Length: 304
Image: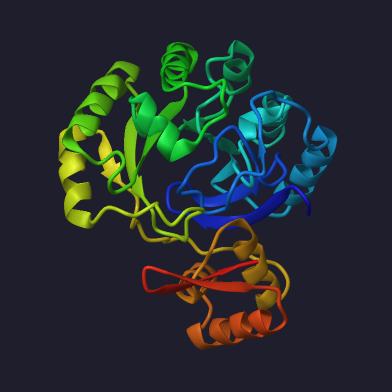
């Protein structure tokens, strides 16, 4: 499979079958905290980055064998950059009835055609981490034609027409957007957007830039109280679902590590596999040069 991966366990979506429509690392942002790495192609013009028919064929083949909780469009870049996103979502809904989620940075929702492509999704999860232009540019390093006011107006317009669940993710970085005045201004705008949930996140895996420092639990809890009853902290939420993988243990480890940095404990818990066996498989893959090891906040992470 080139475009479909998993199913993999998700903190927010249960058993999630991933769809990757964008080549790495093509995005409208170059976020300090991105666990996939630095953006190498920064664009805002949607295009057919991968063939839609091939994606649909892989989805049909996979969904005939597994029944995930969600088909999730995310992956190696910004999924709303694909011009056929709406058609592919409609295909999934029409043929299978499986719920669809889209994880997006929300930067292109100011474009009516992008909003239209997302209307059939059951859940859309955009990011809004600040309402201040200077902070926006520091954290996200966006395309020159983007501004935080444009992003906010796009989110407000989308909320008016969208009937599914809208969860806004707030990515919090120490020293950037965690000050009281930042949080209060953001809270005010998010109340205007009126999402179903506000999900507070921070840096839990190796980021693209070492300047991205996580918040501690005490500060996260305080910010949660500021945002009120719709807010939840997802940064340390455990993975409860088990992954249904095909092939060898090494194949499963590589598939997980291709999408995000993982620890041995992550893999063992997700695959319901003995820790010692996973550790042995990971070390063998490192020795072969198929996995790269890096340490972040005292933990060893592995990336394909």
